[in-house]
Length: 366
Image (cartoon, rainbow, N blue to C red; front, side, top):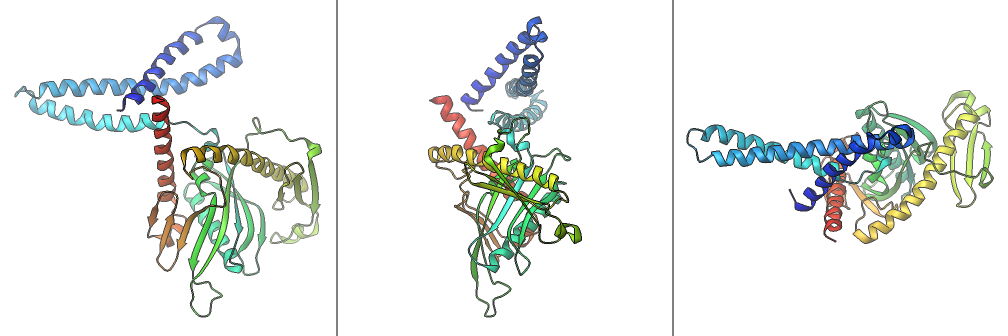
């Protein structure tokens, strides 16, 4: 294991000793807010420290086994022990590296996925529908719940714009942490259904993935900064949705950010959902500005939030998906479009982890 990681882990062991002492003090125990805060930190630090203690033990076991290899009577037993210790040490090192990486508190949150048709007219709108299907199929494979918040359907059955809320709380998985790298420009190359001469067209959609705000930590919006409009919803939904002014559009006047919801049956529920989307968009704007500064320093597009960048190409004639940020190419486009996104998600998460680990090493040596 690299020396800077050992130093980080030794700090965790020292901090655990400090926390044990602090949590035993009567004044800390009497202050419930402080006690709970330190207890949460203790649980996190203890998990890392215990795995590091196991790593140290197995490292000592490996050294002892290697010393015994020279003894003919103990050679075979020592060989087996050395192999077992080496395998476990590799696993422990990878686990400890993951545990040391900075955690985004929003990774565990539900997410709003916004898909908008871009250049390409009707074909772009149809591709927006294909992307929605891809994400909802992937969500189903993860046992996540999907709920359409708002939609603007195109004439051929695609979407000019659609917003879906995806929640993984029932499965314990973090939706935002898995899908946050989907934000950006998605380009498709294929023969459109409307093309009569078999020519390949290129069109594009933009995707934005927003973490649903935690109500306890969400930014506070001044009601006087909001303009709330109601209107009659359109689209599917039966008789009720078309006969009442239940759809809600909320505009945040200082930023011009707009959110709307028409999927619910009541104006009250639509207003509540639209406010969540609006808050998420405002927070994402702040997050994007901060991430853009980090990206400029790290020269990385991962997590930059810059939605104007072309992040991915879907080439149907070649059956190829290419993610341009990490030079990932997969020749299984049809299964990916059916929701088999796991290889893409894992590759992007691994890339981010490697970037974070490199940043940790630079910080440790600075």
